[in-house]
Image 1 (cartoon, rainbow, N blue to C red):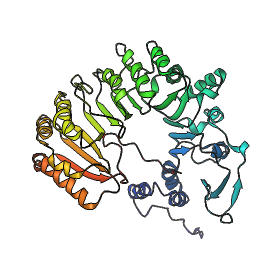
Image 2 (cartoon, helix red, strand yellow):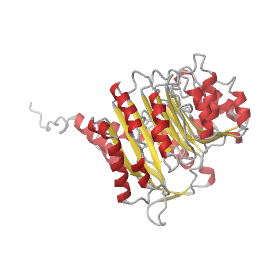
Image 3 (cartoon, one colour):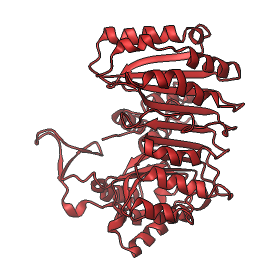
Length: 447
């Protein structure tokens, strides 16, 4: 007997899956397009959800809606969240909904569906962390925390937070930005609660108690877990206190820091950086000086001679002024770099700053020979990537920028002839990465 029902054709993709994956990857920053891709088929849904929800920004006004979605049995992003960002300053009163995406509305009312979010709908960081046991957060390996005052929390609440932190068993990266603590002991307790999983700590933090009190605590306070390999510090309190913690644990098995990034460095911090440079395990180092907060530095301030495992180094924020440019370029910097004896040193980045008061003609009077000779020597022994970035004032004219670039190219002519130098002259308004050594992944849905 013949089957009269039409045969259903097998649904095979017109394009190879590898190609559709590339297309969806290309749309990773377009939330609307990713949403459309997710409606095509289950395979496209998986790829689009990965990009849409790999990073989730749990602002206070979003948290309630997020929990509602995450606990729904039809939730489609359960297994894709790997990074969460929380910011207690992101409190909003009125939000609008666009295709399921909650965003801050700054346009006049009457355009789109509105939802009034009252004060009670803002779930702050302390309460938001109580949801750390959600199934959709089990894969989280990075947490960013901004604008939280730990001093406003009771000891019981702080202990509860540490318990919530410990539930993130796969957490490898923890970032604090504009966070206030009583003293360094609570930072140490938090890192201990995370166990051996923590690999990176960003600590742009401040402390309520005096610097002297915290420095005294560092003699018995260890912030480095057994697996902590990377740290970034960029505050006036954080640099001396946390570097002291690392220095005091240098003789133990705890200090295995291989990557250290220091931001907003001032002259008063150099004495603490000296101790950090004794860590022979350092492989990647960033020293970013705070503009116009650093006078002339010397080879005693930055001694890299003991960093035998150094692979990459970035020194940026070096202010060029009429009074300091000769000493810095002709004496200090060549001596500082000339002490590097690391056999695997391959990447160097130097960043200069020129303010509006600087006379560009002075650049033409500088003798770049000593610095070029040191760089040529390092290049001969394996330094393969040399980047020099000069940041000039936004109001600089095109002629001034071209003049500075010509003088620098003339000063580093041998390096350029060997194609060993990447030279850039940019303005302050240019979108230039803070450093070229460590580039963090871009984040979707930045408000």
